[in-house]
Length: 631
Ligand code: WT7
Image 1 (cartoon, rainbow, N blue to C red):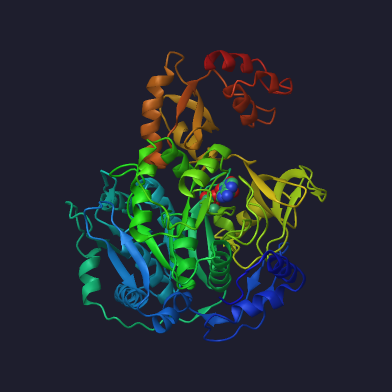
Image 2: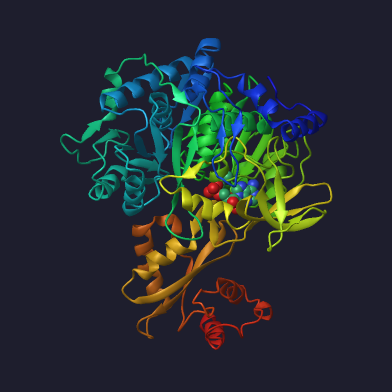
């Protein structure tokens, strides 16, 4: 495979070139893709002016690179093995030639709805093949996809639809999720009561459940697809035309729509997939993520297809019909490369060992993890029980903002160190800075993780709010991109990510902003004010705990927990539900009125000797009352 890193020496060499002669490095790789027109310059702009561009002047369509190239060279190679939620239902498979035809049909359906280049299309679907096909079709027609995870509430969906002014929504009637059914279309209907921008809805029939179709607005996707033509002329996109928007949570305010552009993202998704996973021509790759998250964008929709891989796409959940499902699927398709999240590993580790022992798993060659720090117990279990100590584990650190993997072992090429992401990929210049913003150059070191120079896959802006993009990522340490994560670096330069250093909480690999959850809780009629923190959780990594000041002092924590969780589920979605609620008479605040969550975290973890200096608080006496309330 062209330009794939094959050895440790070559990694060193590639890395060095990418730093010393960045443009040469990326130009060589860009030339392996199909372009309608070559670029004028490789990279321009910088973090100071926040005007980064890659391959500007170039014209291309990402789906030509993900589909047409392979439909021509390896038309009969399977692109997707789709495994349904219920193992009794028939699986579906598409070759590259068939997938291209499906995408073309979908693109024709979009064109029939009046979708044009640059329009935003929102996807609110479960992991059915049409989800992947629709997202690709959006890119093929030159529109911008904005995928909203199917676990978000009607309110959260409406906010995201309105923020990017989406013209069309694609959904399914209902989703199968283990033995549950999620009423996606009903939720969409509720959301659309508040979205005047949406002109049409395409609804895929999946369960056949009873739903309402609004005359003139709603269309059955299956019927339109069946009638659509299998040819479609891909749109010519500028390298810097937006490809997608994806919302993610931060420490303050509403979720942000990170915008990624075409050429740089394409190169990043493709090159990182190729180098990190080292998937061979006959290998079978499986990433268990949902396309609702960035992992499903970069390592289901784009990375594997850009490289012509065969992959498994799974509709269901790890524990249905039983906790052996992942391992049964690995055996069924002889999966060689398996990529999942620590939370799934821990959940399955907690189940009866017979589920693993009943599986063969001998096809596996490479294991991957992503989304949150992996603890050593989970790492060892993954290594021993799943990898049989025979598969390198790639611990891939990256973010929605980075577009693709930034720091990771390259499977079978560079060294694995348990619980360490290890070394930066070519093109990535990580650095650690102290709280004053001074770079720490000595090793070993610990500090705030920043990235020093533009890379092709970086988000270019927050949709509609470039200033917020600057504020959020480039103002804490001017001239550098600040990740929000803390990290350690060992004497050989290997990174270990320690977790968020801001007010973002990672629950089961999902990013949750404290401010969003507090806003939801504060809507509750019985609550004056609240503060949310993350506490360690055996399976989820972290779980949410809220300290709440009620209007009436006789309100009980338990009663409030139930009704607050109902409210959170409505405002955000079940993923943001609280594990625990504690009624308190007040919250610790600085003199400027900022809630000191650090103190709440120490109280919650019982580290009362580590509270630090509380005398500068506006209300130091409240700390003892909170400690009392905890008991
Ligand atoms: C945050 C990004 C990257 C796709 C999924 C999550 C945490 C991610 C790792 C890892 C330790 C990790 C970080 C990061 N994170 N991967 N391998 N080790 N932490 O994307 O929702 O944008 O979240 O997830 O805290 O900042 P995301």
